[in-house]
Length: 181
Image (tube, rainbow, N blue to C red; front, side, top):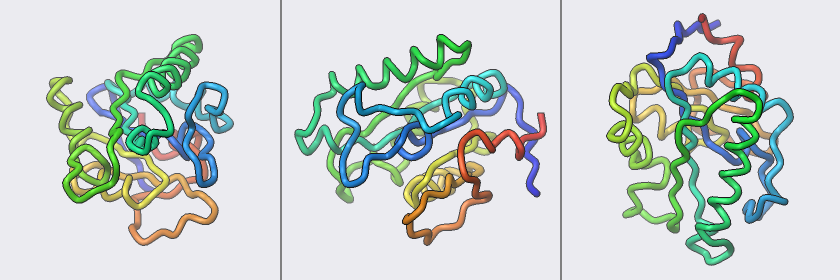
């Protein structure tokens, strides 16, 4: 079993849909009413935010690019997520999102590194070699791997896995089992 010696000099990057909240089948979470935490993910973030120096959410949100929702809708969803975590004593340092459509030129969308590099520029001390990326898709794992991060895959039924993460777990609440604090 891998054990990573994590302390407050480390950074945690979290995908949103399928890691923090329930993914909607063939749809996007477009409102606060559609946003539902995966069981235990909110408590896991509270716990993890007390260990890691920074906790960032990095999420592709092309529902905006498709015109299915607005950035204002997304802001309200993220505010609900952040307020829920804060009310329980935790903190999400910042949410980064890529609103554009998937294309080879879109530098912000995972697996491209734009969101992580922006986080590093805005938060001095972020070291990708002391970072963990948690996601549920190959693009999340590629994103973390290309930057030198440790990678954790949240296994989802039906997801075709072509890229292997450092570890695979069933939910965010299991990650503490792999941290040596």
